[in-house]
Amino acid sequence: MALVQQSKANFEYQALGMDEVARDIQNIITAINAGGSGATTGDVVFVADKDDFPTAVGGVITLAANITYFLTADIDLAGDRLVGSQDTVLIGGSSENCSLTSTGLGAGVALFTTEWTTPIRHIAFKDVDTCLAGMST
Image (cartoon, rainbow, N blue to C red):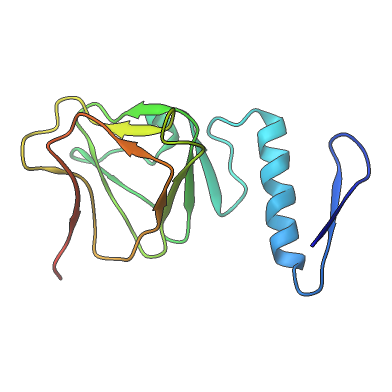
């Protein structure tokens, strides 16, 4: 795939069959340039703090289906936990500075549960008793 810089903030991506990927990349660049935190590009949500996730209900933050959550910082869910949906993705810039914890989450309670396959990359889980658990249906 060829990358051609047209100006400082405007990129054109050219490759056969890659139009949708090119649009997604351009949307991510636009979101980052617009400020990052809580920015969305339709299918990507940049998460800099707990408030950038969906609102917790009864201590559970249910992540939206078909959304990639891109963590940009260390995030404390303050006793809440995450539940994934179909095709949810969690990714961070680096596990050195992008982590999830939940101060006050009880022993044996998983920080993240899902019944779906969920790609998770470049994120550290810190200071929790149980990080991940699958859900039976």
